[in-house]
Length: 71
Image (cartoon, rainbow, N blue to C red; front, top):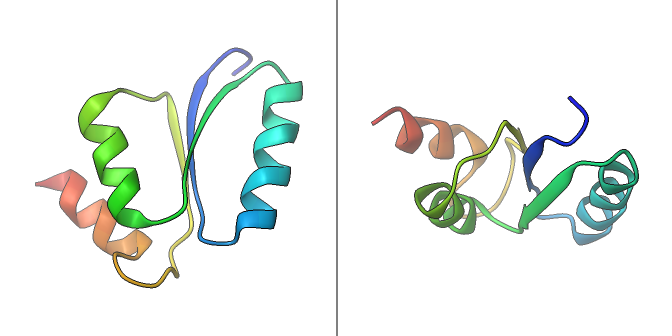
């Protein structure tokens, strides 16, 4: 999946930044969201090849994000 457009969603800033850096080193274009609400906003604005989504986040968690996307 080299060169893929990825959305990385995680409330843990350190994890998100380090993972995004590794993915970018592999040639991926990475957009980041710190919470589920921002992820939904980004998904309404753009398309991604893959979403890496934390399931346990405060507020709109990953399970709820998937439910919103399915509607």
